[in-house]
Image (cartoon, rainbow, N blue to C red):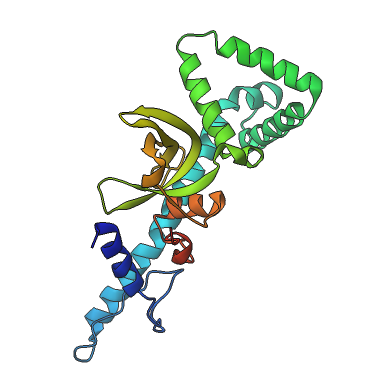
Length: 240
């Protein structure tokens, strides 16, 4: 019996159990132990821990939003002082949104695309900024909706060891020279959690890769959430 078959049996056995009223996908509830009658301090402790777990993502989101808001305001602070004579809270964020909107309009226009290509040519000639810009550009192109063909399909690769499977995106196919002739190979991009814009480029024999029924959008959600937004796990472990 191979390791892959053993893994399949263990996964089939992990059927979803009926949820109790205390279970929640939206909020991490901490329920006191049922052994004995829960006391006052046990009640306070469980509610306090639940409050901390619920507040953590909110605090992180608010902290990041405030940091970005203040950063944009600081960038445009000289403009507000020069034209209005005083700092205006939120002006930087509003101007940044307008600039991104006009960049999008320019990207859909023939003349705008020419100007953007001219600016891109200037950036790619600067030694320090060239690798940063080109790397960020390729990542944004790969994850844009109109470039979904960049990721041909979602696959499972044996990583980090045999018997373990990792979600990856197939980016191409090629043939490698082997002792007995050409070997079909697949090129994959394995994203990292929780930031799918970073990861590893790997090449595997085509026979070592398993296909899935996941769409690219579903796979990105799984990677970002660490598997919490997996939904139907049967789509991941498709029969080979």
